Amino acid sequence: MARLKNKVALITGATGGIGEATAKAFLTEGARVMLVGRSEKKLHATQERLNAGDAVRVSIADAADEAAIKAAVAATVEHFGGLDILFANAGTEGDLKAVTDLTVEEFQSVLTTNVVGVWLCMKHSADALRKSGSGSIIATSSIAGAIGFPNMSPYIASKHAVCGLVKTAALEFGPDNVRVNAVAPGPIDNRMMQSVGLQLAPDAVAAIRAQVEESTALKRYGTNEEVANLALFLASDEASYCTGGYYLVDGGYVAA
Ligand SMILES: NC(=O)c1ccc[n+]([C@@H]2O[C@H](COP(=O)([O-])OP(=O)(O)OC[C@H]3O[C@@H](n4cnc5c(N)ncnc54)[C@H](OP(=O)(O)O)[C@@H]3O)[C@@H](O)[C@H]2O)c1
Image (tube, rainbow, N blue to C red; front, side, top):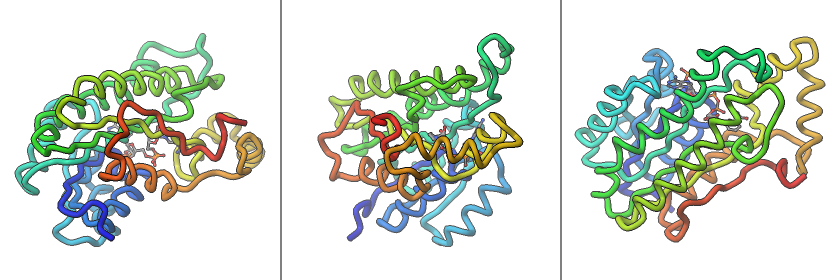
């Protein structure tokens, strides 16, 4: 079954764990995909691993570089003939510090990538998505979009903000049948959670992981592929009445 047959997707944060797994899922279901990232080297390595020939292109852009994001969308439309799916997924955990220890620069840099970055993607893909007739925007929030964690205030604030953006864009784009949803992963077994563990307790990374796993109902971290499966559903026409939503893929972390 090709659930994304004839669809074109743009994915930011494509060089990361969730982004690459989602690109793979989208390609498997028949989509053509523009991988967007800030590192040319990582983008080409990802493209090579995906091994999908002409169905994959790359575009270099920092998440919050307006001209580069605009150019990435334009390149997608020019090369693939349109845009149906935006996966605004680039994000950073930033430096884990107490509210009282953060500098303005540290706080702002997380908000810039995680919030301004998502907004710019929405802004510059809106015309193309409207033209598609059944566009889908998926933004990566987090369980951090619903609850707090000590020492992660910029990240928590940013992921709550993504939920606000998603609700607003869903209302603005709904009349043109462009759906806008947030995926909210819990702890996923990839670089970002390793970084969080290292920053929280460099000498007790395994203990932190065990503690986080214990906080989920399923007693484990999730995989990139499990997040990709949810993004795939929201990208597909199977989710035709889903918009403005916040979809957890968290092993029951928020419920526990
Ligand atoms: N991992 C988790 O447990 C978890 C849980 C909840 C939500 N999330 C969210 O999931 C999304 C994907 O993260 P991940 O888990 O796949 O972690 P990851 O492997 O660290 O991937 C993060 C991606 O975002 C990109 N990125 C970071 N800052 C950027 C910037 N300024 N401009 C452009 N791209 C930038 C990274 O690019 P580089 O490769 O160049 O660094 C990478 O492609 C993020 O929004 C994250 O907040 C993750």
